[in-house]
Length: 163
Image: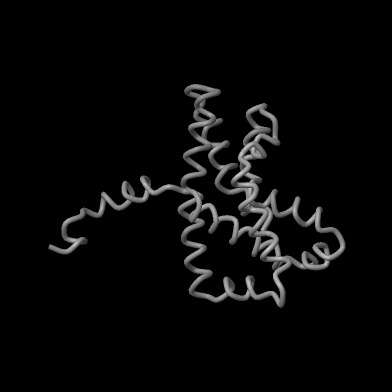
């Protein structure tokens, strides 16, 4: 008995929902976000002139949905800084993408098959972020559907606004 025959198509999303996001899917999200930042005009020059500004921009790309949804719900926008492991992982990716000698790290992950894998994993992460945003809004405003949709949208799509 092969796996596709034993598993119904409706069970695939359930299997994905049980996968842990950290570290692989979060890493893919950070890679895609920071690589997109590096590809912006002038980003490399900013990273040379002001590494702190470049790091701050990278963290906004990685955690912008959390910042915006916190602002929408009246919470501190720096609450994402409490997740030290995620900040360290995103900072490590930022450092390797922008400052790896001879740009080897960026070139490795810019290879199209790896880039497509990262993009697919980032989309899985996006669905988790939307669900987390809706659940977070529901904990503050029960039965406020418009608020839940807005916060879920903000969590899942903030990176698409900027890039």
